[in-house]
Amino acid sequence: MINKVFFILVICLCHISMIYCQTLTKNQMLEDLNFLESKIKQYYIPLPLLENRTGVSFVEEFNFLKSKITKDEPIENFVELVRQGLNSINDPHSQIVRKDQIKWYVPNSYLSAVGNVTLKDTISADYFHSLVSDTIYSKIKCQILVKYINGSYYNVRPFGYENLIVDSGEQITAIDGVPMNDFINKYRNLLLFTSWDPILKQWFCESFKVSLPLIGKTQFTLTVGGKDLKLDCGKPLTILSREFTNSYSPQVYLIDNNILYIRMPMMMNVDWYREELLKKYTPDVKKIIIDIRDNGGGDDSVWQDLLKVIINKPLTYQYKVQIPNNDTLIHCVHSFGDIRRIGNNLYVESDRVIEPDSNSINYDGKIYILQNKYTFSAAAALSSVAWQNPDLILVGEPTVTISGYTFPAIMFKLPNSQVVFNLAFSCDAVGGSSNPFMDKVEVQIAEDADIKGYVDKIMNYDCYGLDYIMNKDKLIKYIKSVH
Image (cartoon, rainbow, N blue to C red; front, side, top):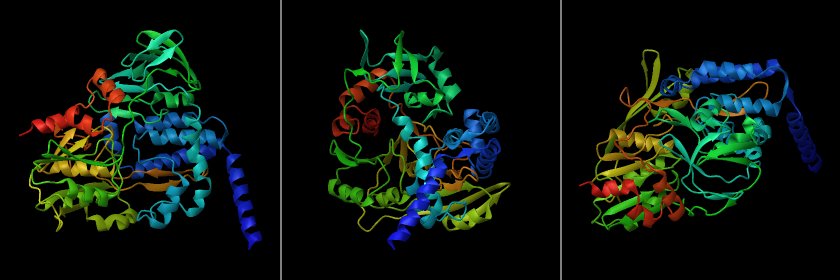
């Protein structure tokens, strides 16, 4: 038995070693990029919305990527091109995946029949994923902290540079002499975490420093407050003051004895929220707030089950999600609603109802849902419901991604490199022509409208702590003022 285990281990190690040393031919890489492009065209339903929203030409972006393939390359160089290709669709659900994601997806996901991934693909997944994450972060020692507000970039964390002090709030205007917005637009597919500003209609990236080594800029000149600073990604700065430590745990507060505030940083652990709500609620509560700012998603049932313990009557909403016209996919998702064809488009539709629980507090007032530009996935599904329902008021900022109710992503494997990636395939169609990107709010309030207020928040407060929520938060102030 021991010899058998040892033999299997040796085979696995040899397989991994072969992957690490693998060189892909030009034709193999082109075949893989063509596969990736074809799957995006076939499955990524929001693609026309993305092109309409941002002005991106997907075909041009992939043609540019393929033009970079001029000779045989080590596999790690090609993985970077795959990352850039997935970046082109600006969807956080569409990424190179880790081993643990494959181990869960293959036996458990109702979508696993659609792709071409098996458990054997776990062997090299973590290595491929590390090429676009761990190896990049390990090179970054420079601790500049940047905030993008109204089209401009600002330094947040004060630091010393030679005999100068670079203070909080000083504007960052250029990298290597290139104006910031031009720089981000030029390199947006190489950068990690590039986002779309739906108000000014341009790309932005607050974490550009992490990606500079990918562009070959381990050393760079940053123009801050009119000063040209020659910085090195691998060298730490002298930090003069650090930001306040924020709490990212779930919270339930009573504000002014008549507002119940529920902070949901992730869609997880619904039992905790229900128990805390029942403990904190009193008949004096006139308004309820569910705060999903910066909530990256989780499980839809969390917000659904939370609403059940709040509402006093059935809450209805329309579920209408567009999907590709694919027989296997239709079979996988048919239980979510009726399959309806309109022209060349295919939708999963149902009229849904959330019924009050027997232990509901039977609240009959307005529920305010707070979103910001980074609300996403299962949290954005709650935003979709709020946008439809007159008893739920959606307050905050438009999202940086195409938002709303969607299915989880599908996994695919590239034929030659064997890189496994997630690919989003659906979009929320309930907004129609009035809200096609499902990114809108009913009451738009810029959470961080000026750098002075943002620096004060970051440096002096836990922005989700009771003190800030009660006394400083703009969205809460608005809700307090509503009669």
